[in-house]
Length: 236
Image (cartoon, rainbow, N blue to C red; front, top):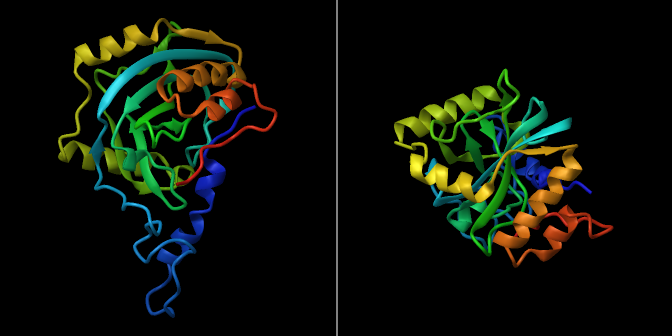
């Protein structure tokens, strides 16, 4: 059964609407559980962005016979190819929050978080990509940076927003991973996966969550279809 963080992040819309109140409107209370800066009460503030990841651990490209809708983009494109990545980063950048949170961007695409990642500091994510003329996955991580852009609701992010964030990242010297790092991560990942659909992809991702975030066995079980009721990452 497929699960995402979208339902959790949707709660943050309340905070976004409050922040957009017209000038001169009566003061309104912050969303429940948040302060006026949009931070979750009792949770460390969001670190400054743009921010680099700590380590690119694993990369594995995939193709699908039947595509799916990428819900972590406003345009909701159909995806039939991409790359699975495993990264290590500052846990506060990864932490699921009930407000907008730093968006993980790879090149010109948003990455879909597939686990909580806070306790382990390790995140497994899916990055949609296009295909080349020969059918191979068109995403060169030696040329495309991976970084945490400004806090936002992923489902509200579009191409224009990403382009703006890329400009900010370039000015902040956010750079692609070194060639040796990408090659090592690709070696750990293995050859391109040829899969039937999103369910098959989730099973592969579940195994990676089990390996790299061993504290999240429930999430791994859900992705692998071992639970009747899937467990989505929880805000902390």
